[in-house]
Length: 346
Image (tube, rainbow, N blue to C red; front, side):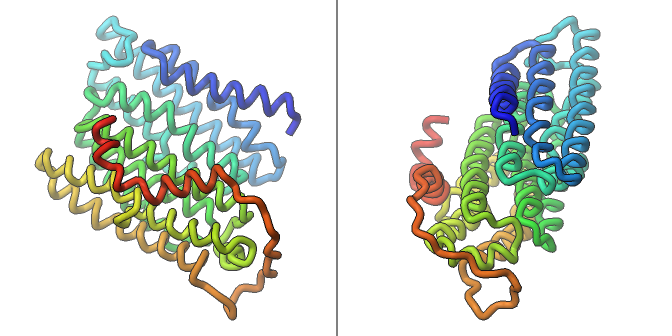
């Protein structure tokens, strides 16, 4: 990619995210989302591979539809109430349209079809941006309007997202698709609690970003794109692969790792809200996700030769330790003891 194009797209991406997060007016929020969409497209299509071009077109069409729905929702609300303020969403139809628009942008079920395909057509770095930074503006809008949204609709979307995210990830061999379904399942947990405790939903989102970033950076470092190459990447960096196993188990939500904290707090919050059945269902459905995380952990660390892969073993070259990955991996695995401090801050 041309350096000037890369710089312009990166700055537009940061600017679009900042505008949406900091805006209180619907039109400004919409403008930020549009800027974000246009800025990420060069990153998706930079390889000029047919799959990348297809991913860019799919992404553009879905995001343009979601943005149009969001604008229509805000206009309907302004027409009936005379308010353009994001927090003053009181019209029921507008609230429903906004929920659909944000679900499309986040990739919640039943608007999830585009997300695994787009991630599969992108590079690991772009997939990281799509899974983390691009979900920040819609999550901010969800946070600001959480008091106006329909809890029953969000709970239904949450349960189906956790179920489908776990179920569809079971038979995947492509790592980007597995992480896409992992993202759908995690956002299901977020959607389940957003109307009852928005701050807890934000904490869940931040920890999801932390763990997903660590996984993507590790895979980018080992250049692993599918399970077969992940099985041989231990020869290249054994320590990094052992760390990857712990981060994957943290993403699965196993105690005493960081990923257990949001799940524990969400189940506690749902129980307080007398939604024990919902808490039980999503806790049981998360076992599906646990299976494919364990599968990834097994392939990354525990599988040793002789194994059934035809891939050539990678050279184990002495490389300097990546400090960013080291710090992120430590936070992704060992933050649970700091939970009282985190809860005090949030």
